[in-house]
Length: 407
Ligand SMILES: Cc1cc2nc3c(=O)[nH]c(=O)nc-3n(C[C@H](O)[C@H](O)[C@H](O)COP(=O)(O)OP(=O)(O)OC[C@H]3O[C@@H](n4cnc5c(N)ncnc54)[C@H](O)[C@@H]3O)c2cc1C
Image (tube, rainbow, N blue to C red; front, side):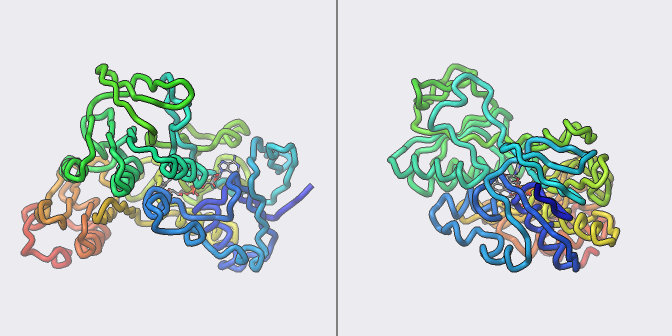
């Protein structure tokens, strides 16, 4: 049986950074990383952007060159899933039945793309966009000449994939069950802007209507909506969120309802087991201590550092500032802070200029900013959030007032 001082489950952003941070913090013990993906750790954000567009080859998605892991004495065990954890024996059990012992375990398994539950959801030509294999299957359909796609889900991943498919000259219809895109993560101004932009680019939107079924013998041929409309298509892209990949942890007795619960040091309720990234529910200081999961590279990266430092004896509670980005067409959206619970949204600049921002306020303070093609607003807005000062919304809306002067 293999045994490592630290076993990391998941070779994505969180897992890779945990291993890197352990070594950066002087950890000299053995490290084993187990990942379901067959490839060495790679970045996920380009999957729905440059990689799908054919603008970035896979080699440029690697988080570190392949040789790095061996040079740092980090053992990669790829193409293997952990199906069970035995916390008493301090072992994880792989799908193959092999057992691997750990001193400490870092669970960084992210989430699985949520699948359609309606009839036809498993037909050929229905694609998720979560890992390289998903996107390679979509690219194969594109190479085979698929022309009309239905994208189900108007969150960031659905919108990004739709933008790329459009850029590749495909006909795209986007279906969103809520009455606006980005409903879960952004205010109405931003949703409206992106809806207008996608429409202008030629995408047909169907908002406020769910999907009833997909039809086709073996391969998808149409998407039937709840209002009876049938949209003929050659392929479907599903971007309806993730299900946190925490089954083995919960089965082993870890606390958690939405993902797995972790402390401010990213420790689970089970001894010697940490959890980080998309799957880790934590009390976030930038959300007034609300227990949330964040699905972002920033969160995975910074939680990994917190857990690695804790293992190295440095107890530094997780309080990293949240930020995020999304690229669609020539639009670069940068988000700082968390807008949940805002009581006012202030528009700064003119969306028609394609460079503007939305500042979200709560109790007179700025708590988040969405900046479109406006890095200055993103940077200065971020500083305003961190300063936690009270501001006048009229000043935020006035482009003649410099945001950094409000601190
Ligand atoms: C298409 C796409 C675009 C994105 N764009 C952005 C963006 O623009 N900006 C941004 O901030 N974030 C973006 N994200 C989100 C970001 O990539 C995630 O938040 C981040 O990858 C989370 O890191 P993680 O380590 O928690 O999980 P992941 O990076 O998902 O890694 C989890 C790993 O665990 C493996 N795994 C799962 N279960 C098991 C198991 N039982 N045994 C072994 N291995 C297992 C998985 O195969 C995977 O390799 C995007 C995500 C996707 C999918």
